[in-house]
Length: 255
Length: 212
Image (cartoon, rainbow over all chains, first blue to last red; front, side, top):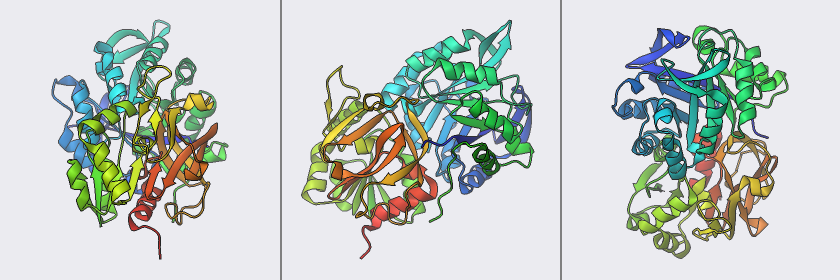
């Protein structure tokens, strides 16, 4: 049976990992490479690594740094930030990425999703959506939450699925970094809208929040950052809590 | 041991090479079909679309070269993910409605969308799923017990014509082929290079061959 994944999200800019609240007030939380190594040694289910400032320039993603970060990662690695062209994807896959997360570029060039899916397969494309509740609807934002896009989340999620996205990473900007719990109605709305797996993100502050995202909102995976950076809680602890709630999680291989 | 990783233009090559380095074998990135000859065994990776992969294999002259190396010289081959699916006769992925694109044909059978097997779950099948062996006379899963989780990420699945070619399955609402073997050709639908310690064990089993 397929297991529910617990996915640490690593946000980085320039030389280090950062974490903010509501996509703002960024705090430095340490260097990237040791964090990737530690998570790999602890056999987390998967890692998401996003360069949060890459979209600000027209430059390529920082392939050299990503290559270095991926050096010791033997669990699935999704890389995001600044992906605007299909050519960049093959370079990222060579640099150690297994999947790519596309967010900002998808609004201007939705075809990018289809191009990546037809070249590298739908399973290679994680469509990332950042959402803020606004005027009674869930509005999608690009450029790390800075720009409104005029897209509503359910329709956008469906379009991304139609274009070939293999998974959706749905993040509530307002819950991000607050550790107040995931936006369950938002996640549930996306889960109901599509038939591809949905990764819940934004707001996890304790293990029960993760259980709720799975049992109440139907998420296939839970992503989290602050809870692992700023509290004593760990991915392994999260999996124990999920298992106690009757959710199937992966057991580490000892052989 | 020189393990050749076939570089035909697609695939998460970085991950495969690193996993092999971790096992302290010497991975050789093989980017010309003629260079396969200098290896002890071969890994055919794959992330992508079956039809595109076949086109790239064709364009690089890999199809005949692989036949020579694998079927002629008997060099062991492990196909991973789409690399495993390429071992099949054909696949519906990337083909027109009702049509099939021809594969390498090393293991008879067809690759079809998970939905066509009656799978009602979310597709792609992404994440860690446990395997159950259907044959116990093979060394690929040596010391790897049933129920061990491996990392899967795929929308299409391989249905070998001869069920004796299936080594292990996984459950995704319907039984899904997780590993195959015919002669000295093996394949895994999951990604051993991304399955942490369980994956290392499997790769070691492949590279070292059966214990005497």
